[in-house]
Image: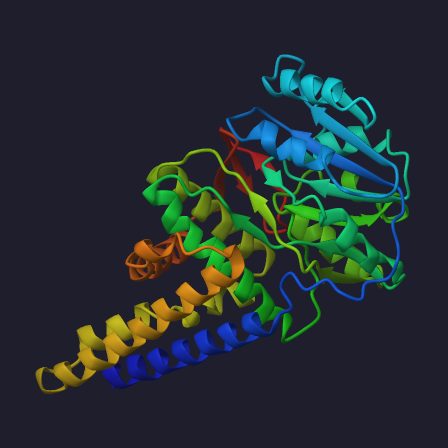
Amino acid sequence: MVPLAFSILAALSIALLLWQWTVAIRFPLREVENLPDFAPAITILKPLKGSDENTRKCLESWFLQEYNAPLQILLGVASEDDSVCDIVRDLISKYPKIDASLIICDPVLGPNAKVSSLCHLSSEIKHDFVAISDADVLAGPNFLRETIPMLKDEQIGLIHSFYELANPTTLAMRYEAITTNADFWSQVLQAASLKPVNFALGASMILRKKQIEELNLFQVLKDYLADDYWMGRKICESGKEVVFSRLPVKCMESKSNWRGVYSHQLRWARTVRVSQPFPYFFSILSNPTLWPVLWYLSASVEQAEHVLHMLLICLLIRISVVNQLQWRFTQSKAHIKYLWLVPIRDILGAFVWLQSFAGNHVVWSGQFYRVGRSGKLVPSK
């Protein structure tokens, strides 16, 4: 009975994988024709902390937007001693025609330092449309011009973007890129094919100022870990739609080792588990390496050769799907020589899934927190 159960789960995982692939292939990624002529003035909020070799390039990409309307860029940091301040001041000096300001966001208003900075920045917003973007996000020069016209539809309350891990400079980051550049965006689209999107992805979001004010968004979210998820949730609860931009952005992450990647994966897993406990629990069913491997390990001697053939077929399908999804999302073939990491990612991913249930503690920006059932952060010693 055990081998039969694992064979059924293996077949189910492959079916879910092919469904995930089909939905992703159909999504009109980077297709932006026939958008309405709509270019309102916009304020860009950039909460910052620290800097690395990619920070200047990422921030400068927002100063270089080819956008035919006034731009205001508000860059917030908790301390004047932060290393990012010098970069910001230099960019403000380099682009004097851009209405840009460095704002010291002190005091910290809650455990979510990013949203704390957004609370401070919100009082300086000049325009009716607001873009919120993480510090490590690099946007193409046409990003605003080809994304914001979707908001001409009053029923749309928020536009959010998929994001590419664009600089996997270590083997550990290549491992993580499988999750980000192949699985994550396609699984999100898979979920969206079942029901309307009621969450947001925080790398880049665009919404209206009046929604921030009417829903008191930043004040409400300053204690939450998954602020982006809850921002989209509250926009939906107000009766508006959350939609995907067809243009992804690039995330230029700091160099990370295996420990850093594992910590990030575990924090992300516990965040999703708290935010969407029921779907997260059953997400293990879509692991297309775990179940074929367990089927093979549980098979009798007589069945072993046949099951091994099925295992290899499953692995071939899985690796082929990952290859095509990464190529479509990144428009690069640099990942091909790292495809051997795919089954390792799936098996380790199963351990991350299991460990996510072992506690509610996460490490974020060097600080330990406990995540409550509602998704709120509580500092932990």
